[in-house]
Length: 176
Image (cartoon, rainbow, N blue to C red):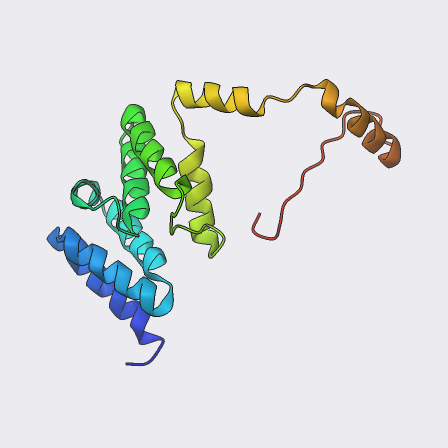
């Protein structure tokens, strides 16, 4: 099999396992592709997006419910289940699934690395953004800066740029 054919074969195998509702096989195939080429999570994500696009959210939910939370592909499954909940207007369910995703990808030892690929980066940013009221409050308490801390910096930026109004500065790398 040519190197180019391997991801396509993995996609088709994962798609078949997902459509058959064979969670153990889905997890094993994703792990195998991850170990062989480092693309198992990406291919699994593509398969799950395809199922969601094709109106097969119930198949995604069945896979996620039966999946092992210790499996490398579990965050991708629970993220996709959160997307399915949002698509059908289930905001409470979406928050629950995205909280599980957030817990999975931020726990020590997580194998989910959002810096490996833009698709994983987007998944990470979207999956950690949706939160319930308690989480939003916790985030505000952790990161609510004192506006006075920015006064001198904003004044310096405004003076340096010659701007008459407020100046907004942001730092980002090439992925954004």
